[in-house]
Length: 476
Length: 54
Image (cartoon, rainbow over all chains, first blue to last red; front, side, top):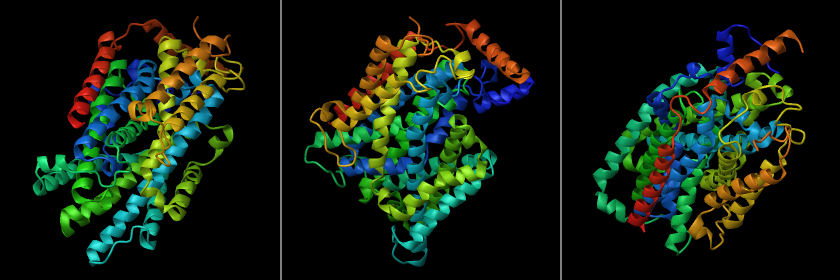
């Protein structure tokens, strides 16, 4: 059990940190504030990377459609699974998850879904920082850029260490960066759009073809592009529940995700797609120098490097705060700075020894969807269909041992089996590593079947086998 | 159970009771229209952009 303050202000602080459910009067955000907050989260440099990756598979017209279709499915399903529950009860996302996986199962899910995702993104964004710095140096000196050279690697390592330093100083320093970067990224996108449209007509852009389509079958390439964007939409699963709990109502917790996350991410990805296809390279650190010329290119690359550190600081902070929530007593005893540094070790190794990850980053992104889509399906089945939108806050926040979410030693085997089923069907339909696919993938995608199957397995097995108070205490 | 634990459980109880009192009511709950809106929005965007692109 957590430490116990005495005044209501102290309890509010503890609730904000996630140990207690936030009461409606303690919530901060209305519709406009939440829309702005999650737009700021979605407008990040990874949008350029994802848009560029889409351009490898399909041309501009199909790419725009894939961005819209993939993201709307991913964001709607993820918001239903996480934001609605958090908006109604104000409960921290991973505390709420105890009702689906048990209090120990939640720790396992956290490691699989959040730690792995965050470490991967930290490495990719650090490499983007390194390439920006390398490109910037080449532009300034008139030399050749070398994206996997020593200069870029050292800069990438520096980016991770700088992020560690910023986050170790606390959330205030991150907030300062956010207030500068989000509006500036919108401005940068508008400038990029202007420069692209100055060189090409809209009709020319729409007629442009894919950079490197892997298959002759255009529909298959289109579905892979949709799958990449679904993965991008589902990749918000670890983050949006804990933002939505700060909103004043259930409706406010849901709809701003469509305006903010879907709208902003789609806009950024479309700019990335247009630039990549028009300029013949999916890497933003290269097309920015091609499109903008030396002077604007230097500014743009410098800013991209800066913006990457901000995105890295945001995800590192969120993940390590969550890690302390779900972690064991041993993890909670580790100092903040040491824990952050420990979290950065694997990204540092990836940057140093696996720089090829950057060019195939979408492979890593799509792997994460094999888990996130299944998690969304389980969340929807559990909250809407099994619990009929009723959560037992006393059981979620009270002592866990012997409580409603004990299951077997704190693990819900049904939830975990459903997660495994979703993951397996995903990989059976579509292997992100090799792009090998079952014929059904071209009609169904992989994320949607994974989401549906995981939800169905959780629903049916829970109805059949989950009996008794310590097995989730499901209503009958 | 010591005094601190009792105080902590009482705070959980107090907060849970607030939500119990709200029940299925409360301001800003998602209605059938909201869920229908999500379905229609997703379907319309999918059909329109799929038809446009393919």
